[in-house]
Image 1: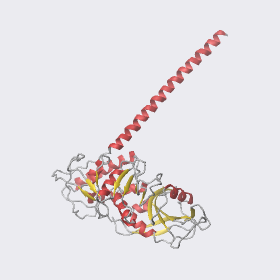
Image 2 (image 1 turned 120 degrees about the vertical axis):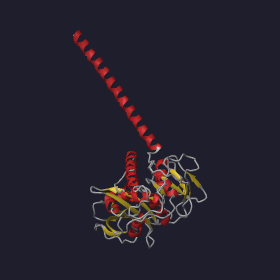
Image 3 (image 1 turned 60 degrees about the vertical axis):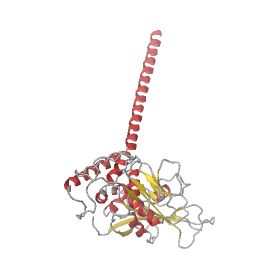
Image 4 (image 1 turned 135 degrees about the vertical axis):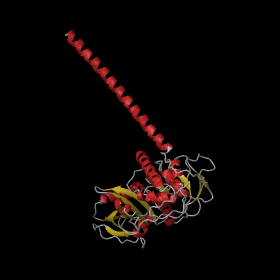
Length: 393
């Protein structure tokens, strides 16, 4: 990866109210390929609900006829208090959409986007997009225990909810989201939706990774930020968790180069896992006897890693204790002299979903065959009746 800043073109929109308004609306937007209607749909679809503490940040994605866009949505109050026609305080939403291919050229972190866009002064409506230089992403140095667990759980195709971070500042929450995604292929940012905060009452939100104050009824994976609570490892996503927990720094280097967009759908995740396995095995064979780093330097970590997945509940399994900013991983790593082999597996939940879909398709095919047989029998009966009537006449 080069250290040279990446220049991107950001389409932008401002969502809010003027003093005469009662409802929120799109106030103005740039004139680029990401249309005003697309901005309206994106901002309303990825709403975090009513926010009591500002600013907050959401990341989302959208498409135009030309590109897939990564969106950074910043919610904040105006510098001077603004009230609508009903006397209610107005929250302004600034939305910046950047072609994902431009960000992947860095690659670029969410924090770098936020630091650059929060200082931008929006132009008049229908102006061209903003030209912004963004620094190349550097890999996070924070403890990786809780981000590892969150990353592996995202691969189960269920949202991940973080509780207990009410007093954690915006920067730390955003850094956590960056840390989680640094443990997955960069291309998965092309379809990630995440938020530094959502209103717990607004359960219909569309975020895959989010902070909030209470669980919702949806089937979310729930993690606690509470440093006094040890969170046990879930069985779901354990194959990926086991793989990423060894030689982590070197694997993060590899993941940063995997910029092809990936969806969070089950089949795409399975394909992504197989591609990662092949890429890592290739690097392992090429650099089997020394630590590996994509920039040519030696990693501080050894290349020793378990050759078999650790059983759930075993002493060698991983437990995560949320401590400090992003949590601390507690794991015993046995020393193995044999050449390491990646043991990526598709999660049990993914396999269950695939099996369920196959079962549904089989039932539908069986039902269609039965219907066809019944229709054929009806046609035979009708033809017989016609023949009898013709004979009587």
